Image (cartoon, rainbow, N blue to C red; front, side, top):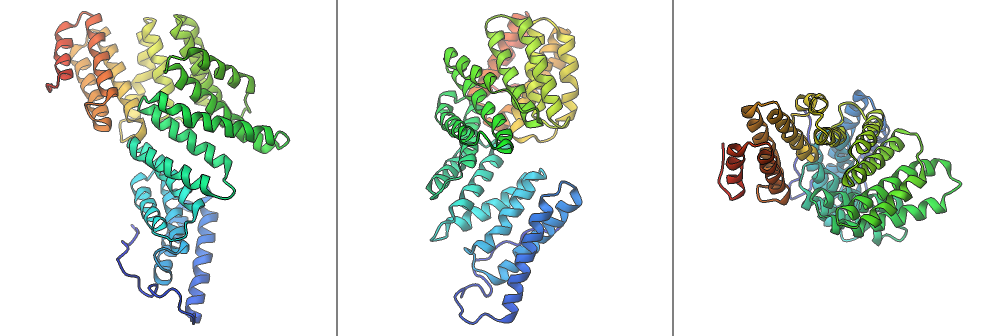
Length: 414
């Protein structure tokens, strides 16, 4: 298993980067570096695993050549690290990605003249990575740095900027900070609206922008809705509906998110049968857009299953949730607490089916998942615990409810 060699404090020959006489050997090594990076970039674009493995090999080799040749702050030394980080991110190797990107980040920060584009990219990737690992406050710090770097460029890349603002907002909403998410969401909406208006004749760009703007509208609608601003939420949902969709997988996913939002509105007004019908459409759209192994599908399953349970359809809920328990039991990063929600809902079903020991085990496993991501004192962990207690009381399971209530006041329970 090839991996990165740790950078020592000193560089071999690179401590004197301004040597005026470049040897022929150095020039040929530079050409080799260029060739490796070019080849790696081409191979990274391929979807098959062997091309990705070849790309990794070439980037590791380019990194080694760069260590021999360039100073630690030289962009040519940093480029292979960014390439490796991105590659590891795309091939679901988050810890390897983190090592490469953190080293690229440290090297970029130590440069006197900043490469703002690369600094923005590295920070954006680190933000997404920390979100994936469930470390949302670290993610948010990197998004802020990415936004600052992107906005400091002479000609900021507006599409990227909108994407970073949107990801920052989603990270905040994952922590239930809906009010804080409104500002970056508003920025992302404004940028995407302007891009769409300026590129009305560019079909390819429109196809990419439509789902992205739909996504921004849906996210800002949720943020308003959960900040008790239902009228604004409806206004953005209406805007999203008016956009229509492109019929691509990305378009289907944006449409699924919109249908899911509509289902939330219907459920909140007490129209459960309407909400279930709408949520079933969202679920089908998400399934047609995503790989069946994609853990983000869980969110649609959870929401539909919750609606089934509220309507007394526990068998339908069980059928939907039961396969997820096995499929996603490994480390899930940002989907950690979605998986915890699956366990808690299966616990609810076990109570309905008069299986108290199974229910208790599922509730404890769910709480353990949430605590390991957020800590036991986090609002999300406490809310989940209260939901379990209230549910058990409603079902007449007062003994188990009291045992879980003990955890709210800080007592442990096994």
